[in-house]
Image 1 (cartoon, rainbow, N blue to C red):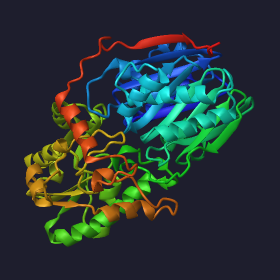
Image 2: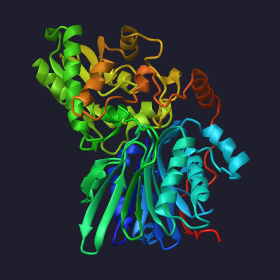
Image 3: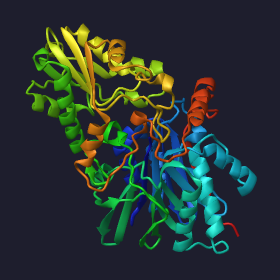
Image 4: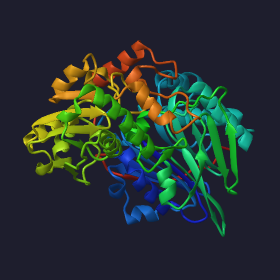
Length: 508
């Protein structure tokens, strides 16, 4: 999971990109980067950490131009920061291209071999995003008229990317001297939306992972980019769109609605907040079947993303809703923190109890999901330490039993608490008196009830069905072996940020 932005404006875009990345900070806290274009020159700055820590005034001044892209990164393999894999990436042959990518390719190794053997392109990092960039560059070279591009050849190149790449990818890219390109994989697994803003100097366009970025920056949401679709905004601010996939299927990642996206976002026409309310209603029905309501004195959410579900559950069951945990706003999201020990430590720093809401009470804690169980175990212990007589636990999502290979940090089965355990065993593991999970069909219904456009989802981490059709047990074994047996070294750059000014003229 990462956050991406692309802007074509009539005035300098550096501040727009910075503000947009701040809004998308929840999608990645590992690194941040901005690239802008001024004529045929790219200016780029990227580094480790939060947006506010990566960019200083001097960095912003060194990012001129009215077209640009931004990226916030979180590592899909849960690894320590490696500077070489911070985005955006760039190539300068045969066209200058900078690219930001959200998602994860599932045929990276095959593409790397093709890059070396057939395309004669060298890949410098282990990042699938660099592979995707080089595939795009090669396809542009194949469709160009000599060393000239037009709109048709750009869209043909995206069609070539779709034919070669498998997995999840939402992409923004700048082609030096031509404009801004954005496209989405044929299943629409990762979100991408665009909007516009009319100014006296002409139209401006913004592409982002979530609609909330458009809202806060004053852009009008036009629509989501369709699965397999590409949009291209040229230097004259003309918008071009084309469906570039042969058989696109709407199958967005359902975990976006559960946890990843901000509640004030609208993804594929569906309000994230409304879906979470519906999750609470369905979960209430399940709780009523599993736990006598007379045994529950109060419903308490685990802040922040579970609040809508917990409120709706409490209202439906007629049980008081209370806030029992106070969140430290300066601690990041524990689910996307690399390293188990880091997550364990930050839970206590992140949350503190309001003792009066627990003392002598039988509480039902509601969370959006349970992945590793680390956070859940700590929270149950905190509730008991605050004086809770009984602690029940409810998850607005089903058990996470399978690895996610499309860009979320849960790639190995051994890290998932639900692997090879039933509900009772999981309850004992986290220390709860009882545990209630949402049913998978109820979760899907929570989204379907708000949209007649989406008939299928990527729910692979819950049901083990990988919609791209290329994920085998052997593939999952390889991922698990690589993660468990390989420790990535720290960046040789010592975590330093980097400023780059690249003159990327098209090859002659």
